[in-house]
Figure 1 (cartoon, rainbow, N blue to C red):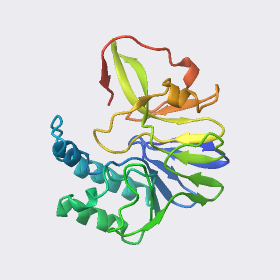
Figure 2 (figure 1 turned 90 degrees about the vertical axis):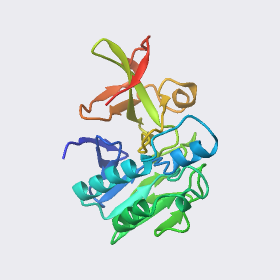
Figure 3 (figure 1 turned 45 degrees about the horizontal axis):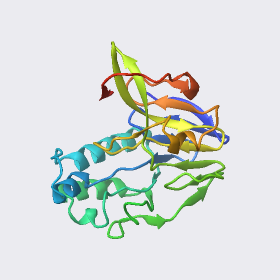
Length: 232
C-alpha cells in the first residue's frame, strides 16, 4: 500500500493517498470531515447541484482503506455528517455499507461543528479522545500538544504542467497535526490563510495527498497566480 511514513509526537504514523491517517501500533485509521450528505444539504438549500453520490464515493474509499490497513479502530474527527440529521437521508445501500465496515471495529465518532455525532448509528461518541499520547478532537486549539484534528480542510497551491493546482494535504508541526477533508466535494482552506498560518509554527510541514505523495516545508510553498483546479 502506498503510504508516507512520518513521526508526530513520538507516534509512528502513515499518511495515506486518500487523506486518511494510519497509526499502525494500535491499528487505528483516522479520517476527518467526511461530510456525508453534503449533496442533500445543498439540494435542500437550492444551491448548485452536486453529484448525488458523494456519500457512496467517500464510504467506498473508506472501505478500501479499512481493508488495506486491517485497522481495528476507526476514529472520525468530526463533521462526519454535513448536517444534524444527515444520517437519516442517506440511501439504504450507503448505510448498509457503513454498518458492514463497523462490524468488529472499535468505531469512534468525534463531535464536529456540523454534527454532534450520528447517534442513530453504531460506535461510541466523544467530544474528544485521548489515546496513546495523542489527543483527537475536531478543531485545533491554540495551546495544543500532540493534537490530531480536522475542520480546516487544509490544501496547498502547486504548479503542475504549467498550471496552478490545489492539492489537499496534511498540515503539521511539533504540536498539532491537521488532516485534510476525507469527504468528496468538500473544498478546503489554503495553508497560508490566516486561520491556519496563525496556528502553525514557522517549521510547519505538509504531506500532499494523491498518487504522488510528498512531504514539504510550508515556507517553501511559494504563492502561485492563476486559475486553480483540484489536483488528483
